[in-house]
Length: 594
Ligand code: SPV
Ligand code: MN
Image 1 (cartoon, protein in one colour):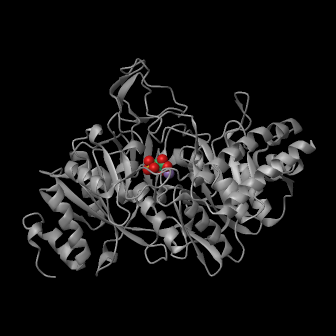
Image 2 (image 1 turned 45 degrees about the vertical axis):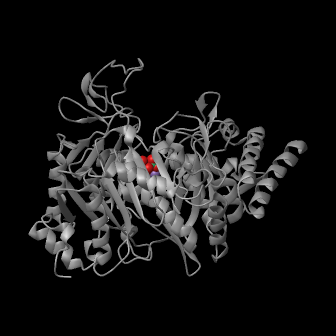
Image 3 (image 1 turned 90 degrees about the vertical axis):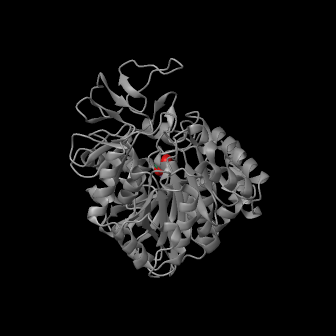
């Protein structure tokens, strides 16, 4: 392949032309042809991922004003449209047949609609082509992906969040395909359209959860592939916890904004958001598909989050999004513990204390879903194995929810199936600002994947169970809830997470005992008293234990009845229903015996 195809004539500089032709990847050319014909860009920029390349993209994000420099070297700020501050569930569709809990659209209709919006959307603009690997290059978890976008901010984010893998595209390798255009930023015409066997399109949005294809859009594709191939593509952090017998790696699923990033800061960091999990020689191994963090910034303060705090105050590449920019050009966010500025610029434009929106509601200085984008390499607790092609061996799996009313802070499942079904597949959690919609409503959110499921749920859960059956020694499963309240008071403080994670390690190493209850195994008072002392230097009374661990049986029973009802109405294998039924039965028997 020595000659440039005609659709690219006049659109590539000589350097870009060499970059593209060197790869000899016909599939890539076909994909570019589709994108160029559809979006009609002025020119095309192939991102090789060299240092100069990366700083060039960053400069362009500044030139297009998608980003503005802050007063710390390397720090920039980006604003999304005021109505484009989170994942847009209502505007996101998977093409094809109906799947319960998934927003679907007939294929032809969905494609026609999104293509009509994308037609000519890049006129007069540069089309950037980012070439990445999800997962460490050369690992069994490597999945190549190409991002096409007219937004330097999107490519800048991806250069921080993913592994540039230009060289891996040599030859006719396959890859996931994403086409994004910021369009005219008319949110009424915002569409995110996912073709599980083809291209993912996204337009009239810049919020990263909708525009950065490799993050949550890719998750729909990899989850679907994982179920077909018998592995797991999950919304999970991966963290290494030190024990007496070495480091134990755990994966942890939490709905957005419910403690996933903070959990990943409690040990050695591998991943804060996503995990590819495979069975290799009877063991579970996990990899981070990403190489950076797109984290929620609200509430990050120097006392509770020293590691992240340092990252956000050290020179180096950080993109802040939708925080407040003060007149001194520093970033301010709610819950930082610093005094609120009088004025600045935020997602609503010019901001001052007491500003109200159209409905008369006060506009907060920073949006509750404001974020920071930063490379994993900036974190002091990064585990050296984060890029290891062999991944790390997983000893435990955690399913966490934001439940104010019922679930105990921590419980251990009886076995793999019990944990997968009654903890993971039964997750209900309060909605947070990471999704556009009413906050704090409880919603069914199995494995924290509600928005990302791309196969029938019963099939997905069955794959999870089968995955465990093929293992020599399945990981222990734990359910956690950092948010239990007594009346309107939380029964735990933020730092108590440390104790629950210590208990996980002690259970793995056989140093803490557990009490069998109808819902699973819970900690003993004596162990927790010791652990609260050891980990936090805190007194722990029997009253504390009672507030945290007396089982709210009625709540549990109602919860599992709701869950049974949900799974009974969809195509769920009988064995899975039986596991839920037995849980309800155990709770009832226990209630009667009291
Ligand atoms: C989340 O909300 O779970 C995130 C950010 O990790 S987003 O990319 O919006 O999904
Ligand atoms: Mn997430």
